[in-house]
Length: 109
Length: 114
Image (cartoon, rainbow over all chains, first blue to last red; front, side, top):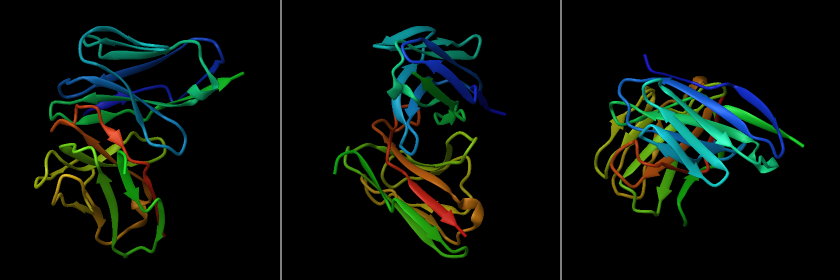
């Protein structure tokens, strides 16, 4: 079967750094996405990795290791507005996204 | 209109009733998708359309049907609603004709079936 694993919830302090991990087992691999979803709102695109390595975009970075079936999202200089759920999704062999259940990130002052 | 709109925002429905959730995008995207999101579960694909005139089944298609008569609209119909279809429904679209392109989501419809 296909599976995406992420921690259910994480807590971090404003101004700090947090790493959200995602491991996956899918039939094929056609890229990995991270989306942000604030409570009661729609998911919005954060990052896309298809090759191994680190992609940096401002305060957010995403890393991929295809051989390990592993990715992480790194959030730096945390702000209260970063409190949200972070969704990991992998493109499978049918070119459809398989979604993790999401990691709820709580930021404390 | 800018992006994707969904209607209604929320709905309470009696079991056995027919319901159509509407989705319209103005980005001229080729592909469109319907997902349901339930607490503790990832987004699950119900149906998709890679281009106008074609549709396909996702992970959880039973009890749902879709049509794609034109590029902009992708309605989702529940023929006879059941309580297990209580969920938040998201419509999404992507520019390419593939699910692994960046997807843009509508605001969602919160559906309760009693």
